[in-house]
Length: 86
Image (cartoon, rainbow, N blue to C red):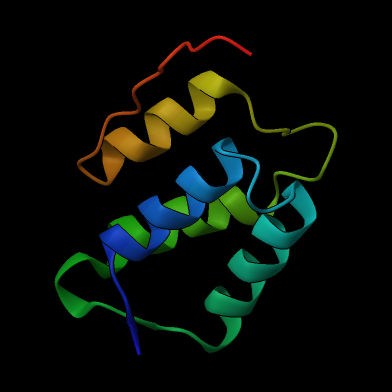
């Protein structure tokens, strides 16, 4: 299966929605960089974003909301926040 911009955006969204953990996001990123087949049309952008996600668990890098917003922007997406009652 080819990894597309949508695939990566979906993973970031899953992390932001607390559907996957930081560890799972990092492990997925590392796996994709090692073995994944990146969509050739956007391979450079996808690889750049995935590489950044792969170091998110390192204290010096981390992964802030702004980082996610920037990474999604590189992929052609924008996050949206909905505030609802708890």
